[in-house]
Image (tube, rainbow, N blue to C red):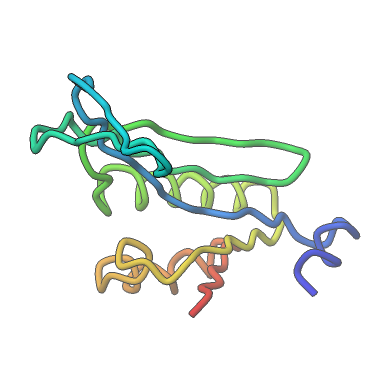
Length: 128
């Protein structure tokens, strides 16, 4: 239903997600036993986490932020969503942001802002 409404131009539909990884230091060696898959031993030492959080509007835009370390509610999720809500209010369009059930999206701090964002024309839809 949301995709149909977006295709008809009734709403702005965006998807929000966060992901990240930690890189391990370089491998010092690898080995394999005959007839088995190659083995790569990982050291216990890891690099710093690189996180990305982004808003995707299919075929229109992809707005993202890269963070060394984890993404906090305040650092990007709330700030960027505030900008999305302000833009929805300014254009007078209804904006729907679809997101997963991650703790960053459903924290008490974020939930307290939902009614404010809805008044501005921004609605969140969380997959459970």
